[in-house]
Figure 1 (cartoon, one colour):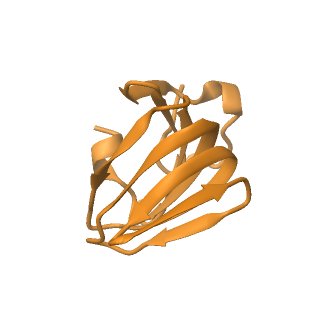
Figure 2 (tube, helix red, strand yellow):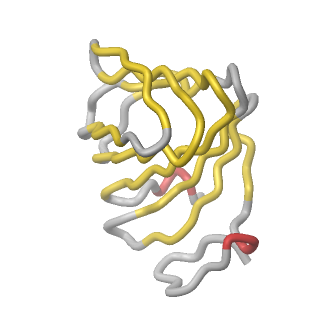
Figure 3 (cartoon, one colour):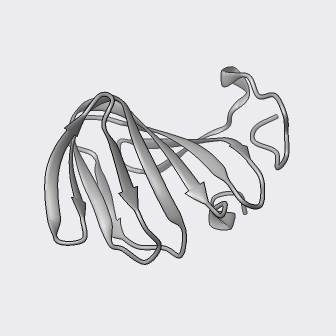
Length: 114
């Protein structure tokens, strides 16, 4: 069935997977107009290209190790770390060890569910 706006329950196995770049698979989880959760599975060496968008984003590192750049600052992050990316701030990452990132967006990313 996949992600459906305002869906109250969603089992992990019901989420649709989409390869968004080499080594990066996105699964949209729950969302409303105001909020969205997306799970991103990265393979070592995969790149989340530098970009910005008009959404505030918080990223939680579920597993793995990543080199993240937010604005002009670059840091290594790993399991349990979080990053805040306010709207319009350029950010991107390189996966150093296979891992999963959980992204929370406000408002939801319409471009993810076209």
